[in-house]
Structures are given as structure tokens and as C-alpha cells.
Length: 467
Ligand code: MN
Ligand code: MN
Image (cartoon, rainbow, N blue to C red; front, side, top):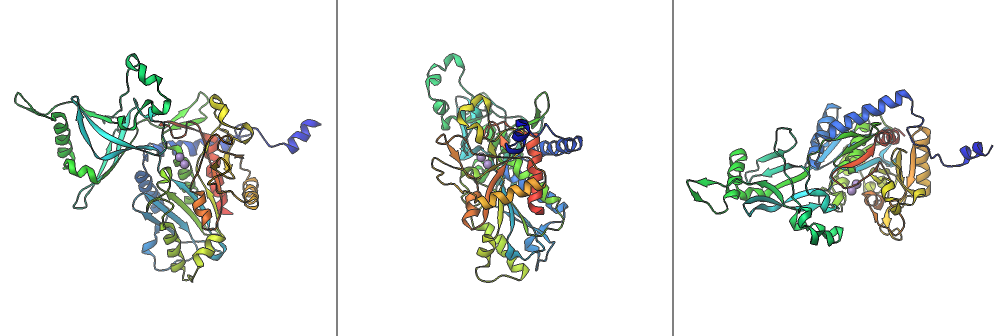
């Protein structure tokens, strides 16, 4: 009796694995297998956008700049400086009834090369780095790193760099002190254990030789010689470059039960990938569907490829212009009637660090897509707080489609906090809720997600657009 009543009245606390049909289980494995394969090909924002463009082209999407006019059913995109991208399917309904937006980010925490990176110390050559995003610095030493990015010459030539991903390539690493001599270091606070200036990448050790004569800065010279032979560049060319150091690990299935994915950059490629693929499977839609793949989220969304820039407004204005419906303030009106899922990852509950989470308001691995009504910190400072009416609307969509979801907060009150791009679109007037996959070890070189949640994210995004 009370069991029945509980079943009726309590929140469902089971994991997604418990009632999974064989058909769903197969689909889930299909999605996570292609996701892992993708992660090995796209570790940086530039690689992600290149992949997304190819996928969109294959699926009948075209650059919006090539269209004179637009009509319902048209599939368009705009690529912003090779680092962010907006895609749209024009809906059957008048655009004045609002957009259905899903927005994720394709940048991940990493180490960037400094503008003058190359130096030689004690017979070793290094590339100096400046970390990007919120990292625990000690996690980035003594792991294999790949070098991915571009060097742009003054004549405009763009040289693609990708060293460390191919099994035959060399990799790079940042050294750390041996425990035998680390007495002082070990006394330090964890956050001070590794100095930002010490995150220098070891790249070489052979000095340039000229007969028997020792050449000063010979190791550096030898490295430049190698770079010059391979890419035709000089030291100066490294100043107009964007080279990112990312873990050279491959994405792998995790666990004896193969239920999880371990990989670099799942924040937020797990939401970006699932939303992009969900969009590719859409046919005609009632409301204009928008997919945002943004850049610079990890450092505050600033700059012309970040979500704070006006580039997104420009894209929507182009749609309004090419639909032939634009008029004063229509852009504002469209945003006011829009709905958005800010598809960014959530902190997964970690039993090893249970004290930072309120167990009744935490996102659990394997319990489905996680909704964060608000983020922010302390007294919800800086939060975009989704309206109850909108939360109910989203719940209804999920329940109608039989999608497992959970509602969570990012950690205990007063413990910390965070934010996503949610507030930026909410500030324009749209209804927005954070909605993503819970992650363990977020921002670490190797992050963990549940295959069930990845699948649940994919289903959620598709259902939202089909609404
Ligand atoms: Mn994120
Ligand atoms: Mn993040």
C-alpha cells in the first residue's frame, strides 16, 4: 500500500539503466560509439566547427550568405571566424512566434601557447603556455599532450598544426618535481602547488651542431630549424598563431559494465555533439530551430566569437531580412517569444566528494538529462533563473517523450557556483533553462559521463525542436 503510494507520489529515483529496453540500449550504444569516435577527431573549437560544417553540408545546410531569400524548410548556417557557428531550420510558423534555440559551447579548458612561446633553459627547449579556462594546474603536468591549432603567416597563409594525435607522432608533456625533492612543494596549498609560469611544455633537447663548436641557444635553434623545414616558419610567425595543448588521450569506454565515457573536452562537446546531431535529423519544424555552437564560454563568453558578441543577433537579423519580414524592433520581439535550452554540462554527484553536493539537489550520473533552474553562486548571484512556467513547459515536453530527467543545483549553497551562456540569451528576453549532461571530474584532462545521459541529451534536444 505505502509502496504504491510512494511510487505514485515520490520523485522517481531509479537510474536510466533500470528500465532500458533492448532497442533503446542498442540506440544508446550507437550514439555513444559515434560520439567517442567524434571526440578523437575534434578536440579544439576550430576542429569542432570544421566537423560541424562538413556534417551540415552533407545534410543539406548552406551558408546563409549564399541565400537571397529564405522560406520555411530552408536549412542555413553562419560560421563565425572558424570558431563558432549558428545553424537554423526555418519553421512553418511565423518567426514572430519565437525561436527554439539550443545553445552549447565548443571550447574546453586547455593550455594555449604564449605569443612568444619558445625558450631554452638548461639545455632543454620549451613552449611557454598560458592556461585557458578554470583548470586545476597540477592535473595538467605529466600527461601526454598534443599540439593543435594554426599558424598564420603575414601573407595570409594558414598552416594547420596537429602533432600528437596520430600514434606515430611525438607527444609533449609538462614535467613535475620528483617526490624525493618535493618537500617544499608538498607543503603548499594545492592551488599553489604548480605555478602558472611553470606550465611550460617540453619540446626538445638536441642542440644544433656546427663542427665541434657549441652554439649558444643551440637547442632552440634546432627546434626552429625543424619548424622551418616542416612549416616554412620563423620564430616571429609563432606570434600570429593559436596553438592549443590538449590531452593526447583517446576517448574510451569506462567501466566493467561499459556504462560510461572517459574523454577530454566533454564539457561541452557532449551537449554540442548531441544537439548538432539531433538537428541533423530534423525534417520540417513548426518553430524556427536554432543551434548555437559558441566559443569562449570557458573564459566568460567575451570577444567576437563569444556569446556576448552581437554576431548571433546579426545571424537572426539576416534571417529576418531574408524572410522579407524585418521591421523596427522585430529582433527584440522574436527573442521575447523565444525558448532556449542552454545545453551545458552539470556537475555530476561524486560519492568521493559528497560533501560539496546536496544529495537531494544534485545531478547523478546515469539518471538522465539534468535541468538547472538556476546557476550563479551564493545568493544566486549572477544567475539566470528559469521561470516556473517555463520549467513546467520543458518538463511537459520531456514527459510527453518519455525522457528521463533530473533537476539539480551546481553544488551546495555557499560552496561555489558557476554559469553558462544561459543569462546572455535570457537577457535578450527569451525563456532559458540550463539543460545538460552531468559530468565527473569536470574541467580535468579526462572527464567522465554516462552513456545513458548522453543518449538522454540527444533525445531531449530532438524533442525540444520537434515541439
Ligand atoms: Mn560548459
Ligand atoms: Mn566549463
